Structure formats: C-alpha cells, structure tokens
Length: 371
Image 1 (cartoon, rainbow, N blue to C red):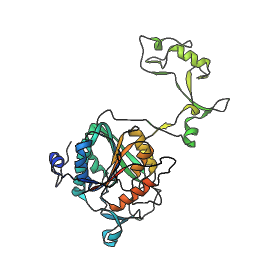
Image 2: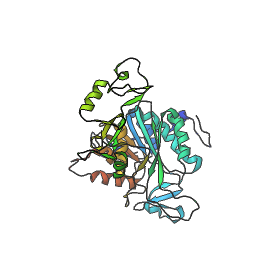
Image 3: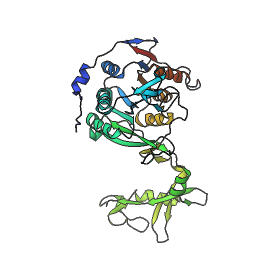
Image 4: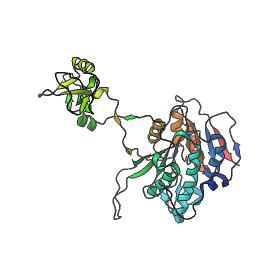
C-alpha cells in the first residue's frame, strides 16, 4: 500500500540525502543512555551508523498538526499571533502534506533503527491520525499493524461546537516483524469487574465463577474424548483436561455440578492476576504539567513494560518533558532521548535529577548536542 501527496520524497533519498551531524558530548561518561539536543531528522540519520537494528522500542508523541505554538507552563495551544515568542516551548505549525512528509521522513529512518523484535507506538491526534496510519502501513507494513489504541485523555468537556465532545486521542502500535517482544500485562479488576465477573461466593467467602469443562473439537484418539463422571463430552467437543486431572479437581472441590448433573470448573477471583488490557486506555495527562502536552508516566511505564524487557534500548525522538526517559530509567531500560527545544532539554534534565534517590543514587547519561 502506498500513499500519494505533494512533496513526497523517495525512501532512498530520505536515507541518503539527509545530512549527518557531528555530536559534542557535554558530559564525558560511558553511559548507555543519551540525551541529544538537536534536529531529530539529522540526529536519527547519524544514529543509523551505530544503532541500526538495535532499538527495541520506540515511543513518539510528535506535533499534531494543530497550527499552534506551545509555551512552558501552559498545556494549552496558543495561536501564533497571540503568543510571546520568548516563551515558546515548541511550535506545531506544519500542516497537510508538509506535516505528513515531515513525519514520514522520520518514520522511514526509525524503521531502520528498530530491531527485528522491536515495536513502535506513535501518539497522535484523532484529526490527523487516520492519515498517519496510512503512512505507517506503508513504512512498517500493514501486516505489522497491532492496534489502534484509544487513549482517554481528559474528563468530558462542554463546548459550543456542533459536534460531540472529544476526550480521546490515539496511539498507533506497529511491530517490525510478526514476532515482537511482548509481555502480556494484566490490569487489576475493578470492583465493578469483580461483582460482574465473579458473581458466586463459596462457604469461605471466596468469589468465583465457573467455566465449561469441555471445549470445541472432537478427540477421536486420546483420553480427553473418553468418559468421565459417568458421561462423555458433548458431541463435537472434548474435555479440557485428561479425565484423571478432572477427577483430581473434583476431589479438591474445584468442580461445581449443576442441578442436572453438568460439571463446570471453578475459577476464583483471588487466584487471578487481573484482566487483559483492551484497546481503550484511561491514562489521563498531568493536571499541572511541567511541559506542554506532557503525558502520563503510568502510560509510558505500561507501554515500556509491555513491549520491552530489562536492558532493552528505548528511543523517543520527540522526548519533550522526558516522561519516556524517566519511565525507561525506572524500569531498568537503556534509553535515547532527542529534542530540538532548549526548554525541553532543561525540563528533561531536571526530571532525571529529581528521580528519588531511593530508586537510583545517580542517573547516568550523556548529554549530547548537535554541532
């Protein structure tokens, strides 16, 4: 699948014609973590020399094509005409095909940097996100599309527009291959979940539910098709486990028999780790952000834990306030952060310094600037 729009470059030109840069290290330590101040297109092109195929997880929260300027200490966009240019954290003024190509250039390089088991999460606004998905389908392959995640970002709002209120943005999740790093994290049951899913209570006060002891598919050979409890599994189905196992469960009181003699397996709430995360997430942004459009630390920790392992390398080339880098540090991942805003770099450095000493006595990183 390919997209066509004005000013679209050839992929080979993106990979070969973007100028590389020289770096100046501001802290002379041997650290696997790097905070880089510079234009991320040129920095990413340079990183290909030493990091091609080595990044295990990428999270980016690029501009959203809002035609706005953002100021430090204010999470709201400001129109260009009314903003004080001395106070600007970053600009979001590219629109239309210019914005799409700006993003595509970087995605082409990020694809090369990603390891074979790596993944990328791209956080974007719902107004432009569907166009961005077409570009990601082209760069990463539609077969490697994993999820379009809806992220609930705020409480319901009232406004005068003739439209429904917007409380969400989207995260596009792609992998480099069909076998990405994946840790299937569970999320806690809510009280509503507990009451809805585990409606029964045993004599000891334990909440539980039941599931059938048989599953679809007839077994012609093997024990799971044989008789147990004076019956065979229904036609076209087989026992989930060997009859000897079922007998053991029954002796332990883990099988519940209905009034008409149908057995079901008891599943106890206190033995479950939680429920599988679905594709609607409720991670709200900080109410008083240090930096415009700052994202939830819990959101980044969840992504990093799900799609990387300890010691893996995480990249955020629009690192902004540095939430991705802090989350990676707290979870014992290595990281690279890039931003071209001097204001952002200052906020990141303060955030890293403020990591509690009981977690890390010293966060080691190299602060690198583009010459």
